[in-house]
Length: 363
Image (tube, one colour):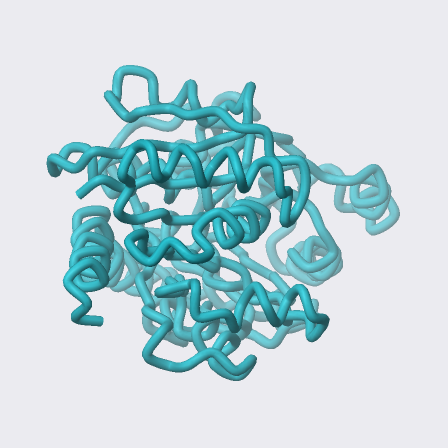
């Protein structure tokens, strides 16, 4: 197949990581793959040596007519059969570019669970039949789209994948050594750039209660955070137990140095960090939002809690530490689930099947 993927993303995110896994796999399976990205995108560096065709194109805004015309010409000249959009702005531009081109199938992936707007532009973008298929990365996101008015049959659930070679219980970790954390200390981690919806505040507010029972525990907070969050840790007098690491590229090592992961998000499509932690063998504490319950099975692969509830976070942490046998069992079950449902090979094959079905007009 002759497939073009398009994204307006220029940096690192869960969505771009999944896109890269997909296009590398499709290329290895013998398809002709083009990636259309903005100029000076970090994504291009990630594909060096992969033989994926790179086409750069300015994408200034949603419904950028100049970008759409440029894209339309490229798709026709290169006889592209499938155009697959991975982010919101590229979705809008791809929609304009393919309008009226019936010989090109247009697919759009949706990874977030934000409520869809009801203005004319949003309704056109999501309800138009020009999008041949939506890919939702969780059942919760599919429900969100169907509730908006998109036909059930036009939305396919394909879970994002986890690189189990990279995210594995095996391998060294020098994180405890780097931050002088004793081997006898428990370590919890929260991984993700700060925003209110990621629940960092509720996580920090849970820590004083945990420290009353386990004063030596350390918490690794990975990702960009606000000054207010650092100040909050000082006001709560937990700054000696919370280590803000900022952006890190050694996430598997951080996970291997930890005893559990906390995902306190207020809304979530399906948090990639949960899959990755489970692949490493960590039990997970996660909020019962979005697609999280599709992977975190309460008291089987982790503990589910209600959002915005610091007491629930504290109680879950204390429970995991106090019952090491249960924590180990949850970690093992979590890795088994990832191996069963979230392999890269499976994700790639499901995309191939979807593209083929569209081209053969079977779906």
